[in-house]
Length: 310
Image (cartoon, rainbow, N blue to C red; front, side, top):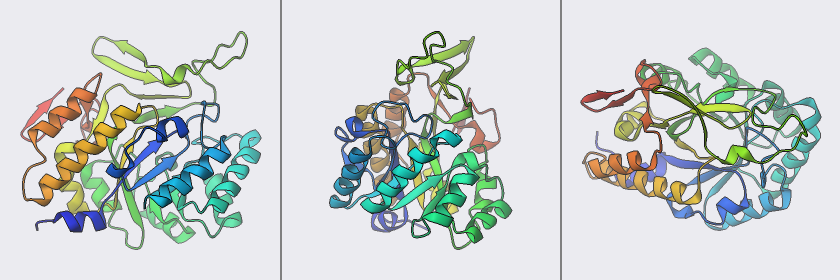
């Protein structure tokens, strides 16, 4: 069945992650429908909307004035000592009219349902939703959207997304987390100073194998990319397509938005996503593309339509 451009605008949400005001001020919001505000990896990252409360409230107001939705992220692995900070951010977000809050941690999810019951809650990737049964549990507990585990194949994702009465979201582009840690691996242990090195590109490489370290997490060295397989995602019925761009520059985020909007327009016109858009996505990736998880292959592989690239 052909999906028209107007139908896609009603049914598919393009959402990008942005850490703070500095990035938001330089983003062309027209390319996206919603934004995840804050940083799920570390509260100490400079400008993090979870800490810069006034900036976060202004961001919500600005995005709403442009007809965009604003979601607040919460830490993937929250520490007990961080709960007062998280509560302060949630209070401010609720006051500002945030559209939803993403929770990865079961404790934060429970906090949201018990103390902020009016807020919509998205269940993030780190909650490890691998099957339809766990998705149904979160639905019954009050979640409005779920980001299933990134490692799911397309076939597995279709089964999970078959749970009715709840939205599902899938990353279509960006550096995906391969694991989390309580301690920052980039921190200078001698003096305890944070030098904001996570904003730089530190890669762990061995022969053709690579990962990017951002201190509390390691990310895929290549950019995860499903641009050639957007029609499949439409058939699965996902309501939200996500760009994992928390560590990307405004210029890269803008270009990704432009590329994927053009790809969607092509699909709506009954065409392919376009070789030029695929090449543009490749050109933006400093270490290449990957999507192997989606096809049950090595995560570092890139599976293209009609060919397999390693």
